[in-house]
Length: 132
Image (cartoon, rainbow, N blue to C red):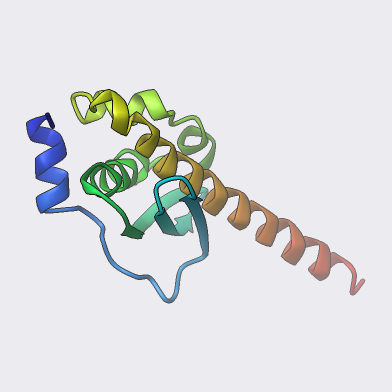
């Protein structure tokens, strides 16, 4: 049913921890199945220097969350925004048809985290310019 890659990322998920000092975080949930994911990022020189996640979900949700962080780590923000559900599925050597929706969790939470970071930077830039 599951590929060896999916089992590997389920049994030993990479980057699975909370990050209290993250530069930004993004969450996404799937109300139809109850899966919920939060991704944390640290950004240095416009690249994701550190990334982690906490997820509540099934085998596929855990594996896709782990793989999403592996794919995004070290990438420039604009490159990370281009990671697709298909990229995650391909990196895991496929998912059963009834679990393909889980790939949306990681990609959506990652995009939310990056957009959260961009908005924070824009807000802090505007606030620093308003004092002139």
